[in-house]
Each structure stands twice: as C-alpha cells, then as structure tokens.
Image (tube, rainbow, N blue to C red; front, side):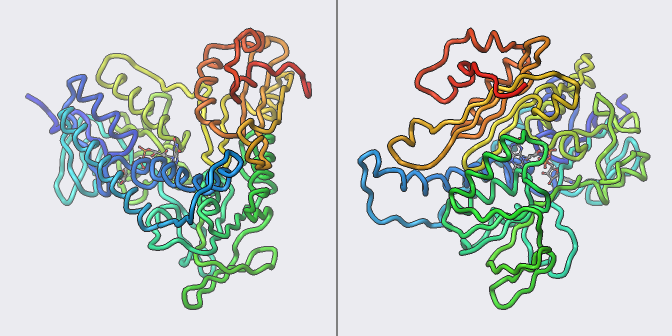
Length: 451
Ligand SMILES: Cc1cc2nc3c(=O)[nH]c(=O)nc-3n(C[C@H](O)[C@H](O)[C@H](O)COP(=O)(O)OP(=O)(O)OC[C@H]3O[C@@H](n4cnc5c(N)ncnc54)[C@H](O)[C@@H]3O)c2cc1C
C-alpha cells in the first residue's frame, strides 16, 4: 500500500522545479508540481528569454546606424514598442504551452495554485492537503526595492517587460547584470538612459577589465553612467517622476527601474514551521545534495541563493532527480560556470577573475588584448573588444577567460569546456584560430601584460 499521495511534490514550475519533476517522473516517481503564477518561471516569463528578445530589438538601432559604411541606405525608421511587447508576449504564451505539454507528457500532475508546506510530508494547496514522500521547494526569487520616500513609484524588471509605452527618459538604479542589461535595452531603443550604482564601478564580482571596458563602451554610446550615487527620494507630478539622488542632484524621468537585488520567494511558505532553516535573506539552507535541514524537504534554484542562473537551477534539479529516484547521489557542479551579461556590447566570463585568482594565492600571468572589431572598420563605430586570460604560472592552466564584445556569450560557452578539461595556455596556443573572427584572439594572445 502506498503511504503518500506522491513521491515528490514540487512547489514552483520554473527552471529548477520543472526539470526535477519531469526527470523524477521519468525514473518512475509519482510527481505533482504546484504553480501559482506562470509556467516556466522567471526565465521564460520575466527573465532570460524576454530579456534577450528585447536586447535583440535594441541592437537594431545600432545596426541601422552602421549600414551606410556597408553601402546600404534605408528609408524612414519607426520603432513600435507595443508591437514588440505584443510579439514577445505571444512567444511567451507559446513557451508556457510547451512547459505544460512537457509536464503532461512526463506524467507529472500540474496543480495551479499557491502551495504551502504544512509539515515535512504535507503540502496545502487552496486548502487541500496533499501528502508526499519528498517536498521540493523551487519557488525562485523576486525583485526587492529598498524602502525610501516615493519608492512605490519605482518599477522592477517584472513591470519593465510590460510597460504600456516606451518612456522618453529612464533611470536604472542598480549595477548588477540586470540593471546593465536594461540600461542597454532602453538606450538602444532611443530612450535617454541614466544608470546609477552606489559603488565605485558596476558589475561587482566580474573581472575589473570587463567592468572598466563595459563602462567605457556604454559611456561612448551615450548612456549616462553615474557611480557612487543612488536614488534617495522619488516625487511624482502628473506623469513625471523626479528623483533626488544621494549626491544631491535631481533627475526627471518617466520611469525609474530598480534592479538592486532579488530575494528568495520563501516568505509565507510555512518552511520554518516545518523545521526548515532559512538564511537571514530568506534563502533555504541546503547541503551539497540540495537537502534542507529537514530530511524530506529539498530546495533548488534561486531560492537557495547559490547561483541565480537558469542553467544552474536546471543542473540542481537534474542532480536531485538522480539522487532521489535514480540511485545516483549527485552533487551539482559549480566548477567554471560560464555566464554572460547581455549588455551592449555583451560580456562573457568563465573561471576566476584576476583578483579572485590572486586572492586564492595563484601567481598569475595576464594576457589581454583590446582591438577594433573588423566589422567596425567600415562602420566607423568607435568600439573596442576586450579579451583577457588569467593563467596560473606554476601549472600553465588557464584559470579564467573574460571578454567584452559582440558574441561574447557564444564564444565563452566553448571556453568553459576547455577550462573544465583543465586546458593550459600552451594548449590554447597550439589550437588553430578561426580566421577572421574575434574568437581567434583567445588562441593567439602571446604577450603577457602583467604577472
Ligand atoms: C530580468 C532577469 C533576467 C535574467 N536573465 C538571465 C539570463 O540571461 N541567464 C540566466 O541564466 N539567468 C537569468 N536570470 C535568472 C533566471 O531567470 C533564474 O535564475 C531562474 O529562473 C531560476 O529558476 P528557479 O527554478 O529557481 O525559479 P523560477 O524560474 O523563478 O521559478 C519559480 C516558480 O515558482 C512559482 N512559485 C513561487 N512560490 C510558489 C508557491 N508558493 N506556490 C506555487 N508556485 C510558486 C513561481 O510563480 C515561479 O513560476 C534572469 C532573471 C531576471 C529576473
């Protein structure tokens, strides 16, 4: 006789929850997943996918401006924000449908509604109690806006994806990757864009050469970047917002977007009542196998605040399914996780930054190049591509690869494989480049710029 209604009850049908649920079902587990808002979670609805579509849209502005150098003349141009949002929404609906089908095909029961944990083996959804051998918390994260006078007038990335009209001026507060990406999107679409960051230089945690190069490139394009300041007050008059900054200056804009951080979506979930320990910021405390402090409750993805990235949430979900239902206890690997910032231009990074490598005690050789991309020899655009390798002197292993420039995300993915294989600088050097490409620079850098 089966003791529980399900073997696994997943709360949240986002990147991590869907992967864990459907793979567990493929191993024979009886699985249900609860979703209160949208299938596919943040990534599909208000994250990676719609963001990248808006990035594509924003790049056309530059592409049009670059055409004359290649002999093209185009007529009058008009950008229709409402059309872009309508088309983006249609694509999201299509993806929601794919997620629904994927779960159904895998035999996972989808329950739409808000789920809460009642005890280590019971969840409640719309007042109904369901028992389960394991509970998986995959509730993701949510943008947080600090409280200050007028903070209620600020929007977050969630609303930015559904703005009824394109503002003339926007202020983006926050220097993480989401802020940088939205600054690029708005600027590319012709919006007067100011980006604020309270620290000395945005993209904290990225290699300093990425941070500096991107700041230069964004300024050259006309983004008003202001560091060591942030919004302290917002006043609204009519449709206009007046922002007073901590440095005393005052700016006006139609929209003020706060991208100043995300917190785990764990409040009101009943986790602590069930004995699950949470960190101060609400993240679920988990071990290497994603197990919480309660034996039957696991957590993956953003709500654990390990690495807030879709492929990481998916890898954690996959590892969990193997651990619980495939007799293969699996720890997700966080080694050399590559990541990109879809800024204008893009950044790509994998492995250690120069500062992190030195802090870990490595004696490093630094190789760096900065060049005008071939494409812009005819467009006349003043853009530089930066590429950098951090190499361990003792072993010759490449510890980190960093890039700012077109296609950085595409180029970095392959480099991540090389780093995971433990590639040395000598092996990079013996690899033949693809000519003419920007990527070939990664295998042709010969001059050390620092040790
Ligand atoms: C603007 C933006 C851009 C991003 N861009 C990138 C990118 O380019 N690349 C990248 O790798 N990552 C990106 N991310 C991060 C990525 O979206 C997340 O890391 C990823 O979605 C996390 O997956 P998850 O499964 O943890 O949570 P989510 O995908 O957020 O899924 C959680 C789900 O749980 C549901 N839920 C929550 N509470 C309950 C409840 N009580 N009951 C029922 N359902 C519940 C939610 O509605 C949601 O659908 C971006 C994020 C943002 C915000």
